[in-house]
Amino acid sequence: MRKFSLTATIWDEEGVYVSKCPELGVASCGDMPEEALSNLKEAVELYLDNARELGIIEDVTTALTAAHKFTSAFEVAA
Image (cartoon, rainbow, N blue to C red; front, side):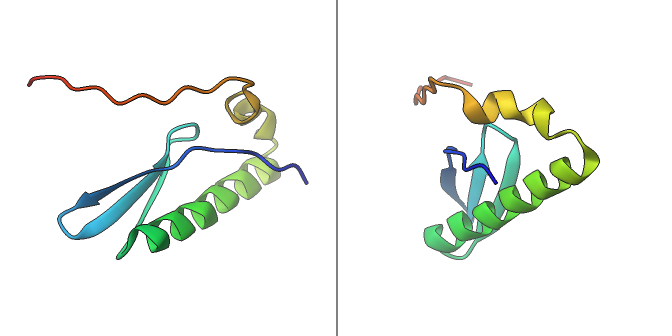
């Protein structure tokens, strides 16, 4: 089994912490940031297990094994 280093973004949305893995588009939530992260890890593991079972794990491997990842914050007016 391979290990992957992924990114988690967590934010407060009306009293619930939402967590998202941008590499896979998988999201979860929790009452505290730590719970949201733990739930996200579980959701990602289930996503990858399902991809493996369906034979499409290689379709997501590129996003999981990229040598360089960049995270940035920016503002826009809307």
